[in-house]
Image (cartoon, rainbow over all chains, first blue to last red; front, side, top):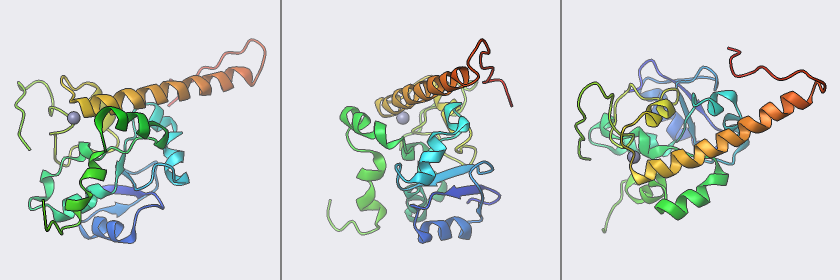
Length: 120
Length: 80
Ligand SMILES: [Zn+2]
C-alpha cells in the first residue's frame, strides 16, 4: 500500500503505527524529504516544528493524524480510506474548528478504529 | 463513501472523497484549495489553517524587515 512512500513520524506516534507503515512498504524519513507527515499530537514539539516551517506556510506540508494508518489497517479495502479526513490542524485552531464542525473525524472514529464495535 | 463525479478536467474531487496514493502531505493542501467544492468540515479547517499561515507569514516578514534595521526590506518568498 505504501510502497516507495517516505513517511515522517512525530514522537507522539506509537510504535505500532510506524511498524504498520513499514510493513506496508513505506520507509521512514526526515520531515523535509517525507511524502507523508504523521502525528498524533498537534502540540508535540516535533509537530510544532512542522507548523512553523516554510513548507507548511506555503501549503506544501499537511500533517495527518496517524490514525489514518489504523483506519487503513482496519479497512476491508485498504485504499478506500480517505486521507483527507485525517488532517491534523495546529492545536491552537482545533477548538474553533470543533465549534464549527463538531469533533474531528479521528476523534469520532476512534471507536471503530479499534476494531471492537460491539454496539452501535 | 459516495463517489462524487466531477466532470473530468477538474481533478480528483473533494478532499473528503479523493482517495488513493496520489495524495500526500505535499500536495494535499494545494489540492484542497483548488477544490471546486469543499464540505463544511474541510472549509472550516482550510479557513483556520489559512489564517494561521498568513499570521505566521506576517510575523516572519516582520522579523526579516526589523532585523537589518534601516532601509533593507526582506526579499523572501521567492527564494527556493
Ligand atoms: Zn471535505
